[in-house]
Image 1 (cartoon, rainbow, N blue to C red):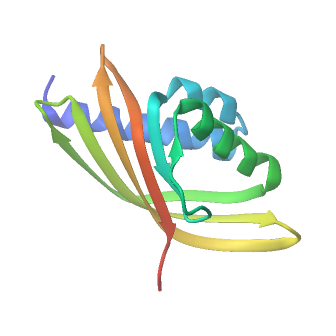
Image 2 (image 1 turned 90 degrees about the horizontal axis):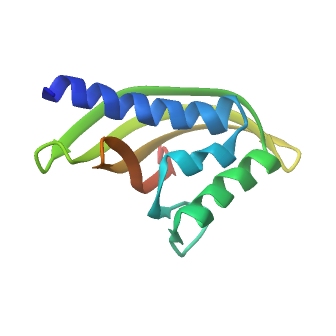
Length: 133
């Protein structure tokens, strides 16, 4: 498979998993995208989130706590390594959600690391943060 096609597959994977938890409120289905050994660095906690189960639970907790009104990804950059077996995806996002009685409008950036195992892209790491403007 050529590099352009692989990059398209990686970006589609990221968009699909974002759609699941943000738009469709199906965070449990992230088990089909998050690697069993996934780690996440999130702005709300000092410690990393470790493992598929903990990561899915974290995303699910957010969707149960917040009411998401808007989500948009922009300016993706996909880099492939290891003969197309590993990818880094960075992009910017905008979102709006209600939480704790407040409406939050947030711009941020996200960085996913994915590995291709047996023909499927799996997220092995995620780090995101609000735009520091």
